[in-house]
Every structure is written in C-alpha cells, then in structure tokens.
Image (cartoon, rainbow, N blue to C red; front, top):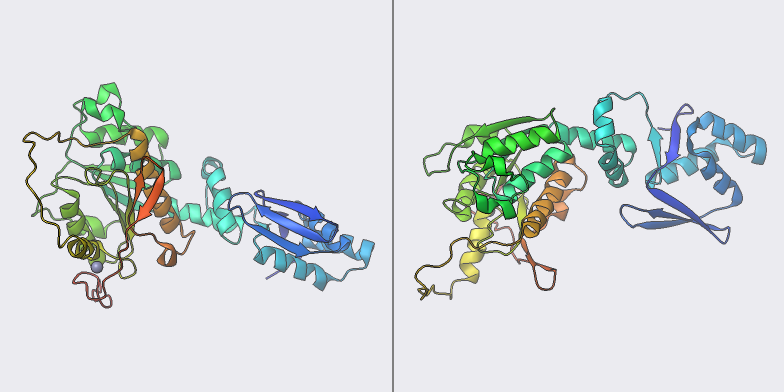
Length: 373
Ligand SMILES: [Zn+2]
C-alpha cells in the first residue's frame, strides 16, 4: 500500500546510470545484478527526488507543478521501483532492533535488504538471527570457528557441546586459540572468546562427550538450529545420531567438519523432509562404494592427525555459516537453493559436489512428517 506520508529512498547499495537519456540502468553492488528501464526525463527527475527525505506528497507536488504529472503516475513508478528492489521505504519509527543492534549490524542489514523487499525486512532478518538459539556439537577447528562467526552475525544464544581440552597443536587451526588456554576446556575457552565479541549473547556450555547412551532429545528440542562437527567417536556416528533426532522434531541442522576424509568439506544443510538427511547420505556412500573393499594399510603407525591449513578450516566454517545464516534469517528460500555436500580442492581452488539425492524410502526422512509434538 502506498501512502502519501511514506518516505522512500534509492537503496544505498544500488547505483543508477543513465544511458542515452533513454534508459536507466540499476546496478546492485551486493548481488551484481543489473536491471534496466526505459525512462523519459520526467521519470529521471522523479527518481532524483526519491532521496530519503521527501515524502510522497512532496514529490507529487514537485511533479505536478513542474510537469503537470498526476499522482497515479508517481504511484506507478514507486510501485515498479519498489518491486524491482531499487527503492526502499524508510520507517524511522520501528522498534524491531535497539539502537546498539542497528549500529552493530548495519552492514549486514544493508546487505540483507538487497535480497528482501525493503530495508525494514533486512532489519527483521537480523532480528531472526538475534532470536535464534543454536547448539554446536564439537568445537574443534571447524565447529569453533562456526561459533565465532555465528556470534559475530548476532545469534542470540549459542550452546557449546564438547569434552575436549585445548592442545598446543590447535594453535595452527583454531581461531580462538590463545597460549593461556592450553589444557583448559575448549568450551570454557571459547565461551570467553565469544563473550568478548558480544557481551549480549548468551553462551551455555556442556562439557560432555557423545556416547551411544547419551540422551540428546531434550537438548535438540530446545533449540532452533543444530550444528554437528563432532568427530569423536567419528563424524558419521554423531551425525547419524543427531540427524535422526533433528528429523524427528523437524529441526534444520548442518553437518560440517570431517577433515580426515575430506580435505575441506563444505558440509551440508539438512532441512528435514526437503534435503537428503544423514541416512540418505549413508545410503549414497554405501551404493557408490559397494565394489570397494578395504585393504589393510601396510604402515603400522599411521600419522593420526591428518589436517590442513587454518585457512581451509575457516573456509569450511565460513561456507557453513553463510548457509546457516541464509536459512535462519530467511534471506533465501533454502528449500529450493540448498547445496549437497561438496569439497574444496586445494590445488586448483575448485569445488566439487556429490551427486546425492533425498531417498523417498529413507527409514529416517522418507514419506511425510509423522511426529506431532
Ligand atoms: Zn533420509
């Protein structure tokens, strides 16, 4: 609905170019999109008036006095430009975020606004992030960096689940590593670092390992999103256990990490009943590897800690966080845009993705959602 008291502005991230006096080209700096419109000089002047200070009534008066242009024409241009995400309505009186939050997240709010209809929707997307509770199982190189990036993005509550202690070999992979943390619990060290980033976020710690008898249902039911990077006893086991519970309660989750087998895995977003679940992935591997028989390795004492660069763990963490933020903020319809697991290949910087699909007969996620809580 267009109201004469409304104030619009050309979005901060949109540049306009005039070509041959006949076309306006809008260039979206954040998404690299271009849109062009045929215009006359009156429309160009109208666009120049949408400066974030004049309300529509004032703009209409200018257009009426100078070009004898009727109110309906102005409304149509406004509607077209708004639908094309070139202009955004300004609402200075909203109370969705505090002044501190608006300042702190101004850059990403501006970015979010590009994918949504208006700046206000960008603010609402930020609010979705602030309102989220996320649990991270396993806070090694990938999980720990995911926690840091989610705290930076503004996730309101983060639960850290790990039993391990900080070792000196973590220095080359963990962003939160500090000399003073050697032998400290990883959860305690990381909590301190997250609270340095943002004192307003809540951080809870659970100092435990994952065993077959470990009960995780109540924990998972209490959060909005689950991240698993827990590679002990091994990632396949923890992922299967966690994904099964998440699918039961229809909670989206992200499986990341697993550096022993994958140089730099992108991990995968799992939206129950939409994307393949961990069980669907397991079936995929079982089928593709069915003719492969493990052969005993001739080297007796193989070097256990197969690793990579800190930059590669950060790549995996950042990839995961981008997908998680898109999902929890509601920026992109991830049901249509999700990616299956991929790998970053170090020598040529390429990304390859698996060819895995959701199994309609999957014992975990096949059929329709049956559980009602
Ligand atoms: Zn499945």
